[in-house]
Image (tube, rainbow, N blue to C red; front, side):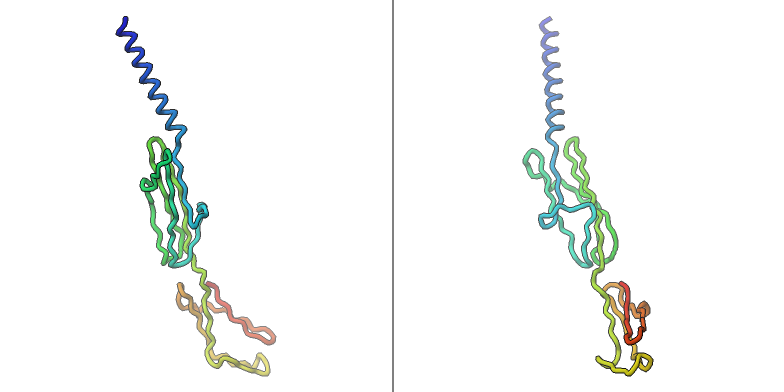
Length: 163
């Protein structure tokens, strides 16, 4: 009888300890934050060509820094315009936390249109204007001369090109 009572007490203690551990783990969830220059990073982040994306990652559990346990999944190429998916993952005990960032590399530098010939051209009318040619160059797309649109109005010639 005494042994049965000891077994019941032992079983009760084991169940109590396991329950305590489960509740403790459920209440003490890790924290996980991604930021850049003290601003919280949203799900979509935009950088310019050749710009680096170096977020600050902070992860803690029970006031202990566990940032080194965060795994980065995915890469990006800051020399190519496009959208990239990067997942930061933290697995701690029963917790599996993911933070996904869609990184967009964009070209914000405008193309340059250069007119050939003299810097200033004077003409009595737009009909007598003699164009000497032009070219358009972009830092990312290269030569855009064939995409230049020319608009002639009453007294002006306007050249535009879209990046």
